[in-house]
Length: 195
Image 1 (tube, rainbow, N blue to C red):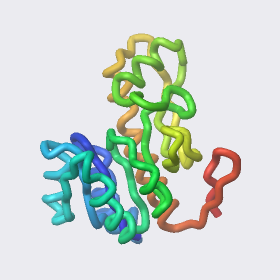
Image 2 (image 1 turned 30 degrees about the vertical axis):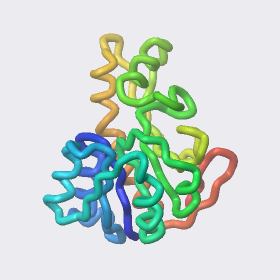
Image 3 (image 1 turned 90 degrees about the vertical axis):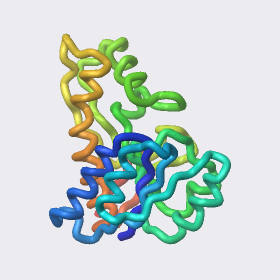
């Protein structure tokens, strides 16, 4: 299975995918492209170290550059990619995204990073955790593939909660890629069911 991984920042989710390919946990997966909305993203350096094709895009070129890439690969992974994809890119191949809350809570336009963890803390929730979901034109509203819970601590700050969520993001993103690469799936209600 060929992946295109879309990034905007440090690339820790990308690194977890790279490590899982290297250690044999994702034996059927090859990262074909890493595409960044940010020319300074450290994720690009992570990809270059592994000789993965890297591309930096501008918003005005998003469709023209991504369409042929999406047609070439089998799965697109949004790993901290902050732009909303145009509708014409959504149905070419399956696209998955990782989000730092238990969707459908605390998702939607403008909800990323500490904006999400601040909203979680302000809500009084006692648990939180990341979600991997299929991408649709309903922002953060696509069918859910995997979720993982962690306890919200009384002394959590937006930064500490987000920091504690990251390792779980890495874990379930890799697990979702493994499922997508090895199993058939169907969508029932808002859930992705694997067989």
